[in-house]
Length: 122
Image (cartoon, rainbow, N blue to C red; front, side):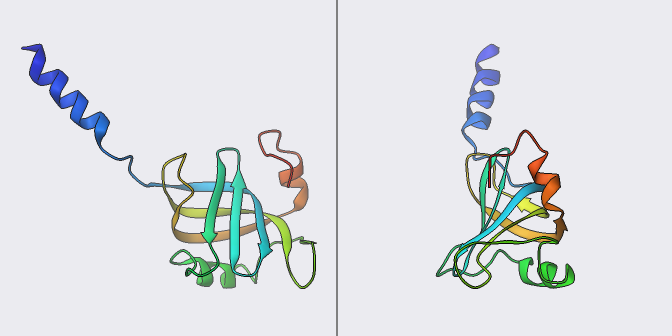
């Protein structure tokens, strides 16, 4: 009788992890043209990679937030740099780097990320 249960458990474990709808907060970084990422305690999440479109919903969410981070540290030339923000949306499982969709972009003060011991340095 235990064999059907073990078979079902094995098959379920082999299924790919599902997307998660949640809020991730951390360093929002624009290091180079068309590369946008959020770095939180679980890793790096790519909102956009050069040569690919941004995650669905990102651009309107970013515009609703009045164009990004409350405070922005410029690196290099132009507007490249980083700030602190939260993204509400669908993300791939931890270990992937996928932002599947964005519902809301919320800029935060730099101090919020600087004071979070779970975040890596920007």
